[in-house]
Structures are given as C-alpha cells and as structure tokens.
Image (cartoon, rainbow over all chains, first blue to last red):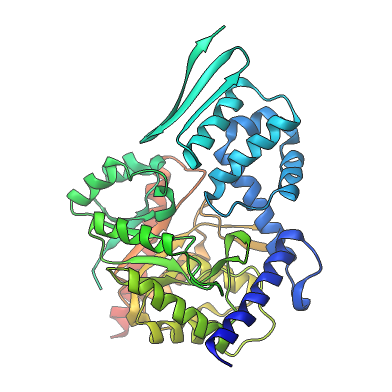
Length: 144
Length: 275
C-alpha cells in the first residue's frame, strides 16, 4: 500500500467512527463507542453552558433538552470551537423562544468574538452594538 | 531540553495568582484561545520576568487522514516566536474527519498505516515550526479493533521517526489505566523518557464507571502516584498542573501544586535512594 492508500483507508475509518459517535448511530466496525458518544455530547453541552452562561440561565431547567435539540440539528462548528458553538446555540434559542435582554447581548458578544468584529442589533427598544477591538464590548447606542 | 520547573496552564482566572507566585516558573497557553484575540499583556509580563511560556495546541489534528490544520500550526509558531518559547506542543490525536468536527481529542489507530500518515503529518507541521514540537499522549475514549503496536510502542515509534519531544500527561496515563486496562508502570517503562519535555497533571472524575480527564476536579492520588513513579525514573524538565474550570480558591490551587511538588520530591528520593 502507498501512503496515499494509507490516507484513504485511514480517512474512511476515522470518518465512520466519528459519524457513529456524533450521530450515535450503529457503531462502526463493531466498536464500543457509547462512552465516547456520551462524553462528547456532555462536553459540548457543558462548554456551551460555560461560554453562554446567561443564555443557559435564561433557558433555565430546559437547558439540557434545548441544547440536545440544537445539537441534533447543528454539527460542532468547524471553526471557533465552543465559542462558535455557543453563538450558534444563542441563535437557535432566539428563533425558538423568548430570551432575556442580557442573553441577547451575550449572543451578540459571542458573534463578535468568533465572526465579523462589529455587530449591531435591535434588542427590544434599544439599538445595541457589540465590537471586538482587543476585548469584546457591547453598548446601547440608541433607545426609543 | 530546557529545565522548566513547576508550571500551570495559564487561564485569565488564574492570571493574578500566577503573577504573584514566582515559584511558577513556566506556563502553558492554549493557542486556540488566541485565534481571535492578541495574547494579554500579562503574558508579555511573565515572559519579561523570565518565565517560560509554552504554546499548546488542541486543534491541529496531527492524526487526521486529510492532513493537519496548517493555520493551527502557524498560530503555535507565531506564539512561540512572540514568547521566545523553547518548543510548542500538540496531541497525538485526530479531532476531525472529512466535514465532521469532534470537538474532542480522539485516538489514532495503532496500525502501521496510521503511523505512516501520522509521521508525514507531523513532518509537515515541523516544516512550519521554528521550534521543536512535543507530542502529548491522550486519554482514549475507545479502542480501535486491531493494532500493530501497543500504546507505548506506537508513541515510541512516532517519537523515533519524527524526532519530536514528549509531553507526558500522567493523568491521561491514569485515565487509560482505568478505562482501557493499560498498565501505567509498564507504559512508563516502555516509552523514551529521555525525550521528555514536560509533564501534565490534571484532575478528573468518574461518571458511570468511566473516568474523565476533566481538568476541573482535584488531582487524584492515583495520578500523583504516576508522577511519583515517573520521577523515580527520571528528573522531568517540567511538571505542570492543568486546571480549566471550577477554579478553587488560591489556597486550594496552591495546595494542588504542593501535592504535585511532594509527589515529585518523593519520586526523586526513591531515585536517589536506588543509586
């Protein structure tokens, strides 16, 4: 086998295993992947809870349930790690439920941290801007 | 290998404690934390005080079949240049496959084919690095069905073929002993400890029969026993505590560091007694 063949074969096996872990589908090659699946899911949920604590508190007792819904529809982001995942979670929550003003601001701060560094959004009767310039800050620029 | 002494993983929550404790002679920074932000002035201050800063990666994915994350390698190198680091470190693992991201470190099969791919990936990373690379053993959440090598043989072969240094995570050794039946002493006796750059010690917890290397719980006595066993064999250039979450009080953190120092001392006494 050439190195290229080695890569192809390894890539196929790694993809099968990771897909099994993430989707909790039938274990690849008869492997025991339940622990890995449970660990990765719990870790992802915990890291988002830490990265978006205000949103997690706003969702309250439903956090695990809502997060699992989100995770089943959204794969772990290729860039940005837990912060990008948390930003995605806040976006998901915005679409599906009422979030507190502070949770919405938290979502803006996360978006500015992992994506375009300036975010402007209407939150209730305010216009809020979040800016990443060294640190990330959000402030209200207009009220009505 | 540069003598590092006693260290800790740098986190903003620990910055003040690190700043005022000169006994912490080195810190490890996670490269990915500085993808979007410049490193804080506190780290420049530590460097200017003569403390060593080691950039550590978590997403380069040295074991991925599709190759390494070159952006991650360049990030580590830029941090190493900024902080005049003696080396950088990454895990012997894969974190992505195709379009799937694990968000976690996963083990590479212990096969000849995987070894060949891993070695070529590491060599590609080394080409982009201006400092040596240290490879860390991970805690495995599953075992691949067939293997041409034991864990120790695989790690040794990767180090031999790439010339990399070793970052030994004693807590991962303990986790693999608990979860995968690895013999930790046999592992220590069959890896090239002369390649050792530094050592990780972190806390963990058992959940439903599986031990998790959380870095947010106290270091177990069993993990410290592995530190002691290691120090009975070799004087490690550096040993550091990993604490990423659920930060206790400064006194408790210092207590954890003191437990690590005591384990090092105990192991060193065994070594000098054996001479």
